[in-house]
Image (cartoon, rainbow, N blue to C red):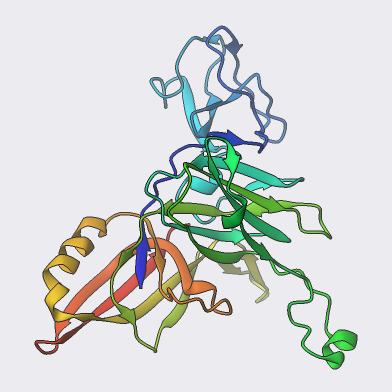
Length: 307
């Protein structure tokens, strides 16, 4: 198992459109009360988030400095939703998504909850693509077609909300990612993109347990009819890793360092495409270490997804 802290804090290039314009200190903003017809007159993008005006005659009041006074943070922007460390938000575009960012010390990328027909990862040095290192991942609606029977009878499906881990070679100064639209909807989206320096936390043992925590509201009326208001469903993951006892002090420090941080857990860090590396963007709910003997020790993990 490895974990990955977010090191992508901004983009050098991003073609994703935003729903609202960037805050302008010379423009007077107003309060709009119709939540379904908000405009640039009352909602702005400032940094990575949308802010909504709480008052009329809102002129030259910085949304961050006057948050909950003149403005309220209304949500993450479409351009930056992929790097906001919440798996429930998405960056969406009715076209190919193309982004670039500085490589720095990134050696691993994880992409979660995405929809695309193809993902291309390119590595650039001073603006020039190092084509020998380009990495391409393709996705098809026919992924489940394995024989003639499947070809004729399998339901045409479009798999969405996939996950992908990409090992990054130690070359270049910029990384460029292109998500090509899914062909039937002409849309691409991505829930989270986390890049950083991966840290090894031992070998995952079989017996990984997946469960779910639903935030839906379920109510039964006087006639016994069940009404469900759907909300997010959160992943809960429990597993164990085995480590060399000699590394125990260092691993204890690593666990304490990220205990209250949102990171990506690469539960299966092998090249097993079928399992999609069992990626979870979340936080440690519980972690403990059992000292078995002078050679090997076991760490138990409980992870809750960040939604």
